[in-house]
Length: 75
Length: 444
Image 1 (cartoon, one colour):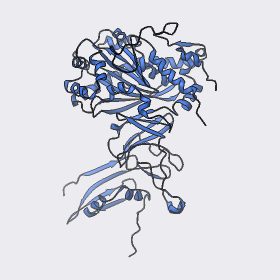
Image 2 (image 1 turned 180 degrees about the horizontal axis):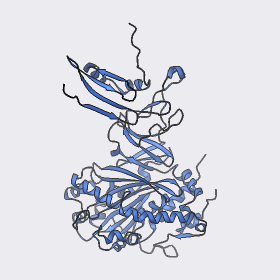
Image 3 (image 1 turned 30 degrees about the vertical axis):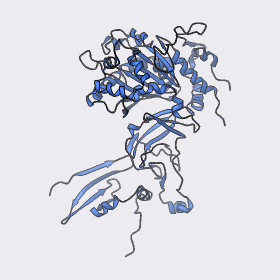
Image 4 (image 1 turned 90 degrees about the horizontal axis):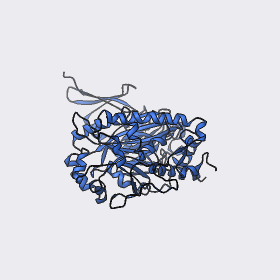
């Protein structure tokens, strides 16, 4: 398996590590915060959905630090 | 209120020495000068993209100067609305949102309050504490000229362009050599144990110190001109809220004179298309080239053309700097390298080298100057300095008439008042404006 490139980026508020995870049938984008340990693996569709958002979406997410913006629906 | 020094003496060009190191005078400067004047905080080229920001000071007030997601440049008071922590601690960066390190309040990069942790539990949510309409405090006034960003703590400050007045004509030589304008590198930032006014006065008009203070720079051949005495052939000018010094160029056409100071042909062609007739005439017809200058109160510029390689060729550089007051006896210098954004890359590289050799924290001129200013400031803090009025009357006869006439428009195409030779006209102009502010009480 070839080594996937890792992108690290940060500013004074956050440090983040982005890498690709290959699955048998596709790929996900792994976004990790090494400091907090939070991580999310986004499929291409989810990443595309990010491109539809405006700053207000991110403001809402940032406004609830360490928590999800929306609770999961009960099963 | 009676000022704590002899104001009438300042108007005569006799400067009470202690104004260069006096806590009471400094308090007045904070209250009456820096609370009103336009202060340079940066250039748009330092924050070219959405989310780019720099943190800059106006005295003790910290501002986040940021380009929002909408492309607008704003200056926001760097103090969290909650408990007053500095929201941005890094001096520069890129962020869509800022987050206070204390309790985690977050703001969009246009200053709007984005979120409070535990908003519902701690404040009752949006009904209990609406975020709507809450923003980091904007600078009371912000305006730009040629991409130079200024802020004023006075919301009723006159428009920046009116404040600059005819000094804008000269500011263009440094900041508008092409329609693209300049780009900045830096700033280098360091502190000197000297009063802020000394540097501002020096850059405004002190051609007289060059032959003496900077002898060694000439001796080692950093400059092509064999004698620093050449400075007396230059003219000083004062226009609007600023003034500066010039060198006299050898005879020749506009193109030859610009080439003499090291501008390559493509840049000269662009200047010819960019500058006004008057701006071109000061160089091409009258033979004067701008050097150091100051805009009241604490912005200075310098344009010089040292030898940068083992030949007689010279190359020009531009530096912009602020003398940021820390206290009566301490100044933080912010020194930027500026170059026309459209200049050839090899020119930019050599121009940067020229700048570093002369100015900036390691520059040779800088070393020469600062020793004088530190010494002056130290001595001004003693008790004897309260009995001494420094003579700043160069260029004036005892009856206050000028020693040399102002250049007529046929000999100097620039606005304002220009005179050839040594004089302290500009230093007096600067301190007169300083006094205008100090004499004007702040309305309640």
